[in-house]
Image (cartoon, rainbow, N blue to C red; front, side, top):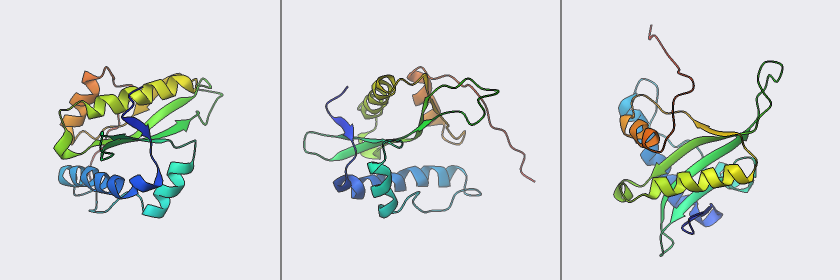
Length: 157
């Protein structure tokens, strides 16, 4: 695991809030019909998420301690084990790299750390969702070796 990637702590909240704004702006720009300009979590919600072992959050902090990216995760099991195999999955809810740090392998380091963490927890797989209005993220994940396993579709009425 990269020594620059670690579990998020309370002192990271201001930097993570700024990254969440960047993620939201990307989604808002791509789908203003669905997204509002807001942050996904409050600072208090982040405190709770950071402390919960079921929702680990990792940050990439440079040598000076500046947070350049984050990865929000959720440990999951299927709800219907009559139909689905009872496996543990690490769902990546969000990976964001600061706009100023893109292209410097920050996202790949966070992703590799998440994979190592998932293996250490006995997870069968790692999953995530990506919005089709974010082709840069889609290319990034494909470059890391992720492949589609289900597809959401819509018709706007």
